[in-house]
Image 1: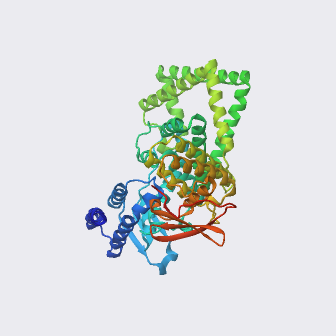
Image 2: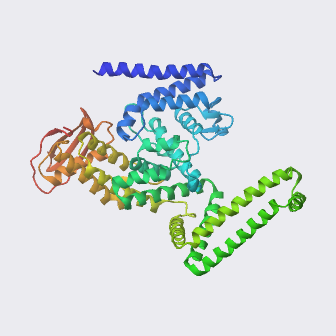
Image 3: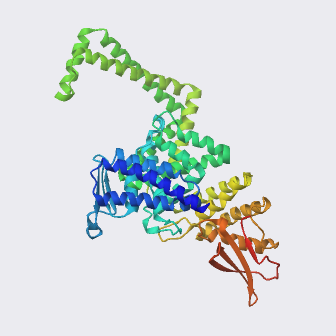
Length: 514
């Protein structure tokens, strides 16, 4: 069976490399570049099964390799390999989307990052959410790049070894991984590939989350998703900070006016009268050739040559567009004067201001918000575990929780499992999962003593062995102390002391997953 699987892997890899080689035949890349691309594909193929098993929420390997091949074929015109002796020229890698050029150090990981970034594109988003287009695009594209490149960064075909210094943005990565498991990677990928501004993915995701976790948690997830997207984008693009500050001021000012109903409606009524006069003025002009001629001359006298109105006919077209704009504004005023319209507008602006007030536009750290997101994530995982009845699906939560515990919380290298404020949340999630797995006969008992059994089983969430199905636990007592040794099949991975003040009956050696 193993020989057959190895043969199939070789066949699949050969298919993907053959496809890449055909693309490379039409590229003027150097032999060094072509070899680095083939080596990158080999490393992805070699590590993918471990990456997929450890992380669970990943795309199909074939789809990823096809996507990378397509980016190389359609968007990549030049790849320059910079030797490590010349590394002062660039910082790891550089791309130019306009020319389709990549310059990279001779490293498969940096090359993979560059290709993914070259293939990135802004999201399509409904017009009413236009302000969120670039922040969400940046957040998702950055997260996907770190998520995909992880297959080379942390996996080498036989072990899982996290490399913190190669995670370009620790906080963004943690936020993205949390949303990845809550929303689902396939949904995120669909969103990034969607080319219709009519599809409102924020609303689609909200409805999906509402069904899974209830209305309140769905709202919390969407609010935090938008908050992180904006805040991370502001750190990248300083001009965005001023734009969001102005947007916040405008909405706060409008809400203040709305709270004084009589004054607000009086202003709207005045504005409506102004629009009415402008419409009447345009109508009069359109029905009088002399007035049209005067307007034509007046406007052209104020415009630079390149912007002058070509003819009276062009002026008429422009006036008709202006008239329609005033008519639309009149309709907006009528809606606001109507009691229902006024209440709807006040509610809309109040919600905007509420959201804008939670944005942290100044601080550089997202520590507090990340803790909130992690707690929310774990509470949602608990809901999923409690609902899940499928044994195979329930097993995936052992991998997901373990992976999540090993995510890095801050630049200093602190792991989530080491964050004191998350201890109880993790414990509640793990205990719920272990109890359900025992009840559904997914894992075996080491002892009938619940406390000792939990202590021993809990350690699997600290192991980095790839396939948890291979865990074998051996218990022994030495010098009055209880020890549990964890094997990856026949290879010892770790031994832990289990604390107990009583004697318990233990199975000597247990294959944990039945």
